[in-house]
Length: 136
Image (cartoon, rainbow, N blue to C red):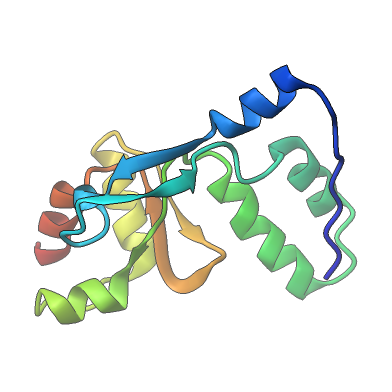
């Protein structure tokens, strides 16, 4: 894996980056933890770059990963939910991820698989509503 970055100088640019790190209320998504952070709350990816990489994908594995990341770029949410962990913790059956995403979208929220974890879902649905949906 290669990671590229660009280092820029200037107080304003540094302030802009620092402003994207925040302590956040973790009670919604960290199962009871009150505060987390400072966490990066800025964008995780460049959607335009991901789409271009997807067009030029050299093989099926890369295409599959980039497709998941491309779908994730449309969901502006901090973190993701691990379905297996939540199903175990709340004693519910593991839902089919694609069906769950469809149901979340139908409720007016955004959702997508996450590339961080095969059983993970990124969504802007509040944690309480998400957990209730798992039980249904």
